[in-house]
Amino acid sequence: MQQTSRRDFLRQSAIGVGFLCTTGAEAADKEPIIDIHQHTHYHGRSDKQLIGHQQAMGITQTILLPSGRPMTRPSTRAGRSNGLAARVLPNSSAKEIADQLPEEFYFGANEITDHKDARKEIEKYLKLGGVVIGEQKFDVQVDSAESQDLYRLAADHGVPILMHFQYKTYNRGFENFWKMLEKHPKTTFIGHAQTWWANIDKKYDPKTGNYPKGPVAAGGLTDQYLQNYPHMFADMSAGSGLNSLLRDEEHTIGFLDRNQDKILYGSDCADTLGRGPSCQGSRTLATIRRLAKNKKIVRKIFYENSKKLFKL
Image (cartoon, rainbow, N blue to C red; front, side, top):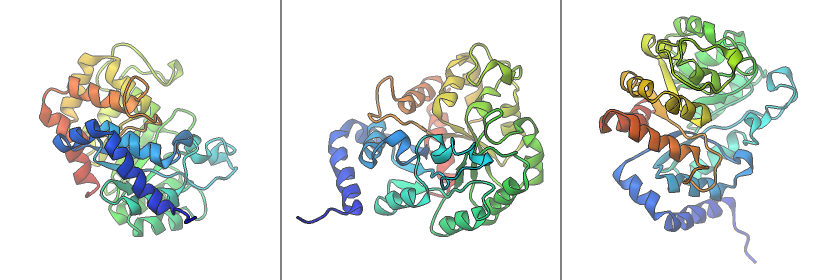
């Protein structure tokens, strides 16, 4: 019996799920959507399920963000955050899918921030076609020497660096990140995760939790970073991104309007269906469509901003 290669399997999977996801495919024809934040083997999800999920949501192009190598060290929180704390696979896995389905998938380049070979490993995959550094999700200070080396690497290669900000856990020092924005004006940064999205609120206190609810006082650090620094962008993904949209819809309307050139849609969704209440990615799409002032803003967030930033 002839063995099926992973290459053939991926192609067959893409064709097979395409027939099952005609609704998503038809939507994609009408409205191109770039998803800047997905992962391979996300909480154990198969490649076939990933492809089907993206097609069901109507995604036309996806950027796969790999993990770093598995290691036990302080920056991986003694190994607890290996696989981006979600069983995500490293660089080679993301590149393989992108190589086999080049019209639908792109890949990022990643490594543990303070690993001695971080620059070498990331640069290797950037030279192979990686379009972003990240997801940087490690327990380091935002102004560490190792972090800044990667900021410079991103600038050298003309790619963004996507950072997971989480209080006392990953990329610490968000309140002082403005210093890095001023020190590295040629680096394009993309903010993501709990601390990033909680700080749309000027009155946010991190001691109250990672997913704050209720009215938002405009002018938080996140809004300031987006408004004051042309090289700072926002990854509207994950539960934290959706929470920021839903907690104060009146604020959201204005936030999407004034930051319409800086927000990038991402799903960061581990669901397998691509629809329904368990699919946070599709819920985020629906919420942006509902709360954006006009279709021009929707198109920027879903497609135009990412196409320009990642040179797709």
